Image (cartoon, rainbow, N blue to C red):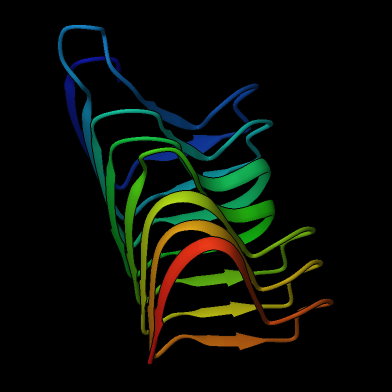
Length: 169
């Protein structure tokens, strides 16, 4: 969605050769996407990529993403009640990305469960488990973690460094 608005209830995206759903700007207006339920699986790129605009993702199952389950480089993402099962990285946040992730499960990534190199990230009541790297790697931006389980990661459960401002409860 480039500069438009889209709402999908129960959308299924199978084996896209790039991103499953991409949200960006047309240069004049930013995109806005709402996904309720449904699934995105087998993407060679990111299952959901947000470069600008907004995405609201509720109860969506993401499986086997070649890059990230959710890749947020800009814009705002409000996500609740979904899952990422098997991606290189479950969630990547960078640039001016602003993400609120509530009651999500990220499981079985080959790399980090969550990677944050900028932006703002809020994690509430979720689980990051069985990551092939660290559960969470955060080096810059603003991070808030409350009631989130990190378990079974090959490396550190949570690795914080750099210019990050973090609140952990």
